[in-house]
Image (cartoon, rainbow, N blue to C red; front, side, top):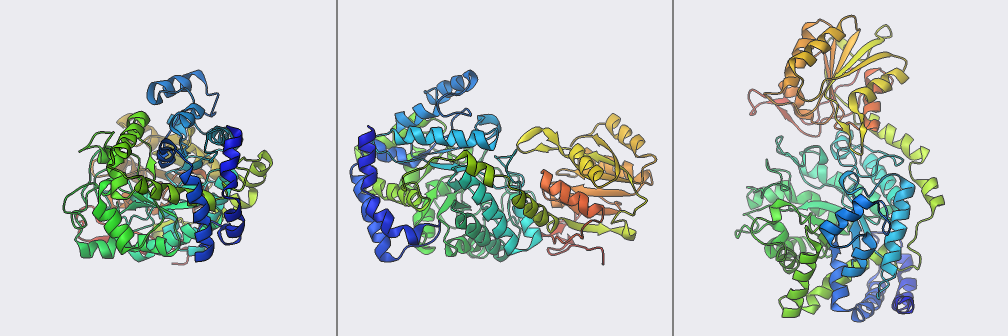
Length: 608
């Protein structure tokens, strides 16, 4: 088996050498002559692959465990129950899998950088043991901000809306480059970022702060900058969710949203960021599980729509890179068809990669049956395989050694210079909305603080929550801080406790998380204001919270609650740095949404 693997890889040797100079960096386009030679080598490899192996290249499944071949017993049992195999290595062998996706938390794939590196090496050992000898393209969903998979040990960066508030294309590109550099050092080749959706609906339950903002052209510029950052670091970027998920009040994880934009509105609101991503050389684009009647009157979900994927994305926008589905376990793509038909219809619509099928055996055999029956032609199958192998070529997977060095992990992941840059970027994103009577920055005599309110857990570490972490950040700045987490739905007893704790304090910093008209967080804030102690409000996720609050002396937005953003907010509140962020979305009044409370671009400094 090893000899067969090597013989297939040598087919690519001449093409790899010829094209290396032009394609050594992801996103760099080879000359037509070099690209033709590269493709000739790839097509030769494809011609030697079985139909089963070709189909396997399309799938990007999940698995459980921190090891590819030796997970703990609990994860082995979960793999057996859901995947029909005990390990990731067995999954790769059984279905000729071309790529996998890592998740933290529920999938237990991620603990620390060295463990991720060893997991990657295990995945690649299993892939090289296949008859094809083709390494895996390993993917992750590391958007930063509210959506983080690799936490401890890696550099944490501001998310999209925070970067939108910073309004610096250089910072957006740098953030992408830092993240991409660290992912590449862990052997992760494709990141499902940046989000190209334009968040024009404040009630959007799934995109929200994952978007760069509400202005399509500004979002497009940020998306392009991030694409260049990621791909300049050697990682495939993925603009998502085409044709645009920014104007919906429904979550496609649980339903099938409908985008009611006219074609003119779609061209003006949704399309620009994807056009910008394509112009920047993005190598993959993710579909959305939603209906857009203006683009496809049949109301097929975009993931299954030839009109949207072939007609608009490939035909009108000219994208010839890899199209990847959003997760196929989501309700939005499973409302009309069975799990055996969804991947078949996605391929017929123009998709290349099939992400996270809910049942790999059903999905794989559904595609195999479609190929054997002629519903999907071998030529169509090979078209997608070629696009996927081009990505593998670009990230260097045919250069002979896909394995990760622990020394490189130590040198790159969580490097001090990366963390310092992340902190500076975060400081430039923190946004000051209200500052009555120059409440901020805190004065030197204001040393006794109470930090109270909602305290969401860090995205990758449930043991660390926002209120105590912000209090710790203040303490490190020389203040004396008491922390009292009251949660997103504080009851009367918790509110009374917070009011009592505010007595004798120089100021109260109250954190909110997605406040609405009926939220008990509103009662907490109003009761704290009634104490007469200056109340400083920090929205740790949703910039729209301030519309439901009144009477606070100062109000800021951090756009997320990870360590880097909380530390930046603490430094701004304490006056160590100026607030420089500007709202990337408008905030409407809660009592009259037709009127704007704060326009996009609003943001105070201490000189105002």
